[in-house]
Image (cartoon, rainbow over all chains, first blue to last red; front, side, top):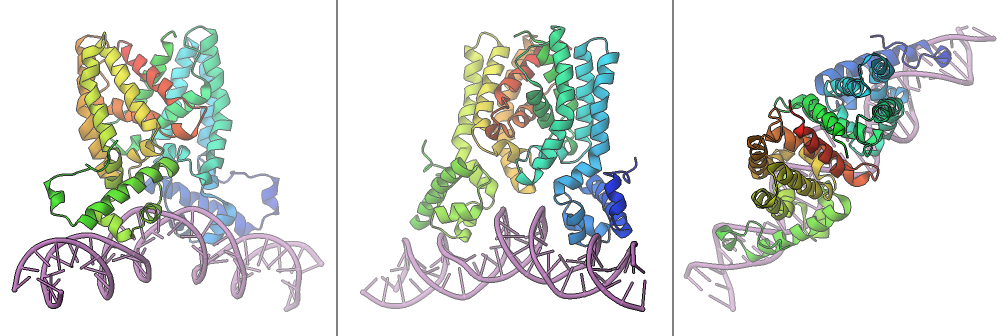
Length: 196
Length: 196
DNA sequence: GCCAAAACGGAACAGTGTTCCGTATCGTTT
DNA sequence: AAACGATACGGAACACTGTTCCGTTTTGGC
């Protein structure tokens, strides 16, 4: 995975090279910190891992949410792009939906604390929440609609509710061996089949 | 609901009456604060609502979790006691389970932030988590076992996983009009019927 | 080499939960 | 009624968050 192209647009060329380098270093530090301490790793830890001041961190990533987005952008995009592919390949839309939900759950469960932060309600994370919804909701809706059109599932659960529900099921899964978020999400998707 | 008998054992008689009165006042203040600001209402707010110092609050409720337990103890107990009654009255164990889950969800959804705090992983809330599990898990397990014995549901979801899953589904439901935790919990319970 | 613009660093702020201890109150005992 | 020890009180102080701000340093075009 290459972090260097995060937001690497024409705008980056206008930046001083020390700024570009610091942003890069910060991203690497954040990846490492998130891996060991979860997405709630203190900002100070990330800054000092990167050997950089707090001001520098905040200039590049105005809020913690921006840092999280930058770190996981590629994986979220990959998840989003997998949706249509699964729909084309699977035997039924419902099977595709199940597989896509599995991808989503796997992603969330392996990012310590991310699912919780998405639901924290903390105003500082609005941007993060919005990013996830913007990127993934259309994909989920497409799969859901396909399954509905195929008359495979009930119609009273919309894509946003489903995504939030599945996301919620992932909360705390990382630090709780006795809890199987994947299986529960599967049960939920099974439940969608019940005609209503 | 009467808060005055919270932990009102023989031990209370040994306490000075100002201490008893303050504990009482603090509980009322906490009820009010939780109602308006959710269970994350700042300790200082609760103390000042009660016209009491921080030290007093912490002496009576050594941790925030103790305060939350004290406030909701009666409702949790009521939920626990409803389990066997529902099992006796319902047409099938699965129907009883569904009704009990509805009770649980209704309770959690109406307590702003409680479901989130139960899953926060914050060590300060271990006591709260333990209390909920101790009190409600046996009830859930009884209902689940009955439904399994009646061959109504799959056997690969244990009571703890189900409770945690349902609890998770309730997170954020209070401050999100477009999200229906009750319905999702219903879908999950439907999913249990799918033979596996 | 100069110098304005850009970026940096970290002290300072605001808001948490929690601890600590000097002071005030209570209730019993004389 | 007065004295006194146990009990309880209040809030300053601490540790830890995220975030802001501004004096200082670095950069890169002239």
